Structures are given as C-alpha cells and as structure tokens.
Image (cartoon, rainbow, N blue to C red; front, side, top):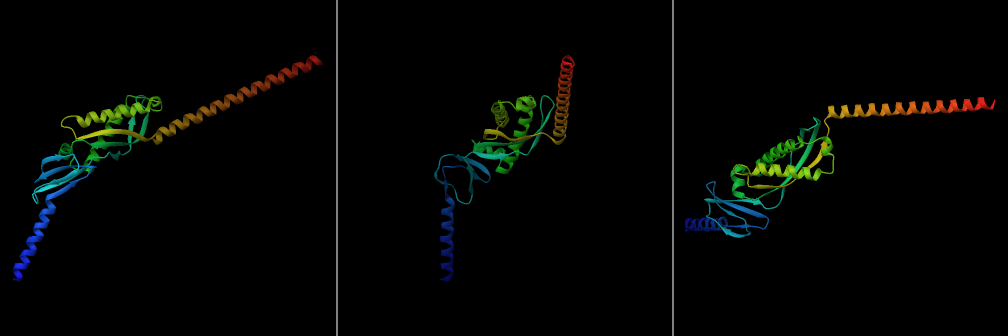
Length: 220
C-alpha cells in the first residue's frame, strides 16, 4: 500500500512537471524559437500562451527590443593620413530569430561579431575622410554611412538575422604621438605669433620714437 502511494505521488509529480513543461508564455518584448534536439521547428513572434512537447522540445527566447553593444576602441587612419582613436557603440534588433540562432547562437557571440563589423566599417568609411570632414557638421551623415555599411555586411551571404539601427562615435581622440606632434606645432605657432607681435611692437615703438625725435628737432 505504501509503495502504491509513493508511485502515485511520483506519477502526479511527473504529470505536473509534464504540464508545466508543455506550456510557455511569450510576452510582448520577446520572440521565441522552438527547438527539438537543437533543431529549430518554428519561430514565434507574437505574444501569447503556446504549447510544445514536454521533455523533447525546448524554447529559446529572444529580445524584441533594441539592444546595445559597445565596440572596443579602434585606431583609424584618415584619408589625410592622420590617426584617430575611435570609441563607438551600436544599437541593433533581432529581426529573424532562426537566422540569428543559426549564425550567432547567443548574445555574447552576437556582440563580438557586431563589434568586429562596426569597427571594420568604421575604419573603411573614416579612411575616405579627412580630419576636417570628421570635425565638420556632416558627422550625422558619416554615422549613417557607417550604419548602412554594417547593415550591408550583416545582410551578405545568409545574413545574421539582425538589423543595425544606429551607430555612434562616443569619443574620438588623437593617439599620444599624434597629439604630441600637434601640440608641438601649436606651441611653435604660438611662439612664432608672439615673436611676430613683439617684433611689430618694437617696430611701432621705434617709429614713435623716431617721429618724436624729428618733431623735437623741428621745434629746436
């Protein structure tokens, strides 16, 4: 009798577990992929309550919201051969969970791959521009060009199942050696201007003294 009770409890628990493993919820900020033995069976993009086979099928949830990544700082060589250390970030969304799962599998790999593509596209685009272009009012246009270039790369071949929404440069610094060179030129230019001002001042002072001397001579 005791053994039967134990078996009954085990059966009830197994049934409850099977029921809970059968149903799953996808909320408004999610999309899902139903897998069977790691093979994708169907994609779910609408929120709601769904059913799957217990034990042999699993669910992977993906975010519908716009996600952000920070690319590692990268050095870019501009068209005028000036060097720039660029720190950028990108925002993206998952548009095709199946393709995303097949190509990238998880967010960590997605971040790594997108960072590579962002930095590659950034170097490519900045390599066609001068320092004056980068510092101009066309910065938003430059960012859009980089974004479009990244989107072209993620759409190539089989695609990554993502869309790049935005790319932004958070900070752009000159490398140390370039900064020192520019600062040296700035100091040299300031010294030249100061010397010019002193020379002009001395010339004007000499002219004033000469004029005063002439006027004194005339008065005498």
